[in-house]
Image (cartoon, rainbow over all chains, first blue to last red):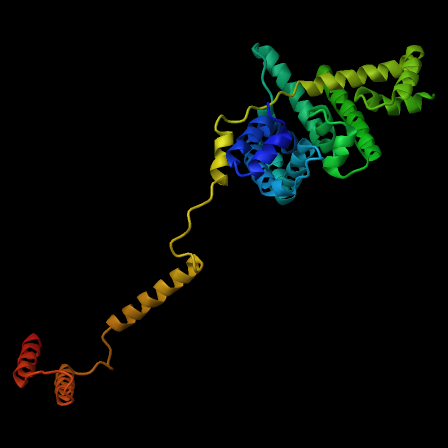
Length: 189
Length: 148
């Protein structure tokens, strides 16, 4: 299998069709990363398309000594934050009106009762994730779901490793409090 | 190492970001501290909750959609100006044509038009530019009269 850098070289040498290899390799990760940031699967797919187009345009500026994955997620992060900035009001009103973004990211259990319980837990988790700051959510997603090291997250975000450590730690503390508190309240009911 | 410091390091330890020496130090503290172990258990539970969030699958044509957008678009036939310029030009021509089609007071009487026409033809003939016969002029005049 060709490495990312070899595929990039092939694309730059004129076989643009090889770019499809990178899309197949990273498409799912990028869509899920964006979906976890914005909690809207349809928009996540649309933004992911723009991310790959932007990556293609910027391939000549990619330095092979850098990590391609970090290069890709840096662009994905920027596109996602731009979208959030532009759509803040829309997202806010959609959430006020109760548009159910979050459930589409989850799979319900096979057992209907289990499904209800799963949904409740998932709703709590999603609400907890929403309660985090954007920076905390970004750092947590890059660590937990994409398994980047703090060093790689620093490359993607431009933050220091100590800042990332603090953001993730605080995110976990907030989520713990939120989720366990909500679970206790649900159990009391 | 104090419990406060250990609790701060637990997140990094869970992420595999501690140096081996620090990791060992935290591990030793955890062995003798129930409170910190409870904190670690809560972190592990949180991780399990986070892992429940399953991934969505991209549509099967996702790569094709992007590759399609990467294809160079065919050049526009009239690519010199933006489309609104053409729209504006069309509008101007249409309005001009429309205004001309409205009968107005300024239009010359039909008789005068015939006279003008014969004068032009006669003048042209005199100049030798056209070999128009008098008969032809008369025929044109007769035809225009009939039309009237």
